[in-house]
Length: 394
Image (cartoon, rainbow, N blue to C red):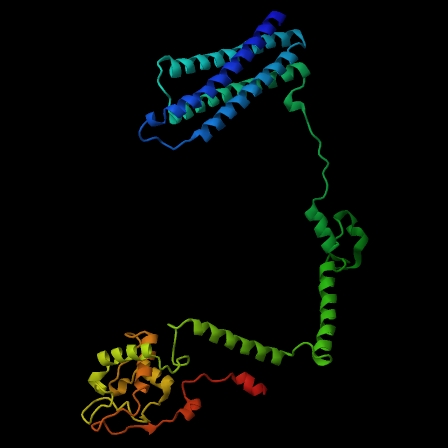
């Protein structure tokens, strides 16, 4: 390539890059002045940060393209054929400043010729197109440089072979250490002499992991015997089981205490709070008065028994009363209320009924059932039975 052409190429490339940089730097100023002129309904929202990022990307691509042009000019000095290819490369390099000049001129005509401001949205699209063209041009230069490299070096890509030393992977090394397995080439050294029906046996050693577990179990057995039966710093199985069961009961009780809406005949407790009694009284007046009377004392003509005396047919106490309301007494005409009332509502009714003890009028129904005293509550049939295994252990 002649020195004059080289100088022209460098000058045009330099001037073209300068015009490109100045052109894209002037576009954001025009876009800021035309924020109100943006087209209605853009596909996406943009700001000046995106604009500056696209400008920076364009400048980087321009610098990269100029660098590739310089590399191709340097390599084009080797060989006659390479000089002919470099002539094509020089013409391709000349296209770069021409493209940059055309972009700069087009930008000047589009944005300054008719004095029409450009919005940020339109500027982003212009910069996207410019970056796309620069990227395609850069890929074309890289392909041309790859072909020029083959010509200069005289080596094809498919002739390059890289020899990688093959060896056992870390998985193979780990398995060899864990199993101590003998390779196939050395199996003759551990082949046992006896033979059965043509089958011979290898004298393999035990895997190290199996030996570690075996020795570890022996060591733990010594520690366990000493800790449980000598030093007594480890609990035996029965004590450990009893402690875990007690801890589980404590955890369940603490959990159930946090769930006021989850209550049954085993967890219900006696309450005298006004809110609970008022709620239970409202439910009693709505559903229970037809059988037990408005005052819960009944009468000689009422179906249900007197609920204000100390006599109970199915057991007194809040747990028994809760169970009776929940399950009902179908053989005596009392339905089960568990499908109509929530557990907290049944508990409120049970507490309301127990709060009416001794309030019966002169017309109250005669006592039925057996007298109930709270001191007998420990024999409640609905109470939770203690763990039989724990009692047997004691």
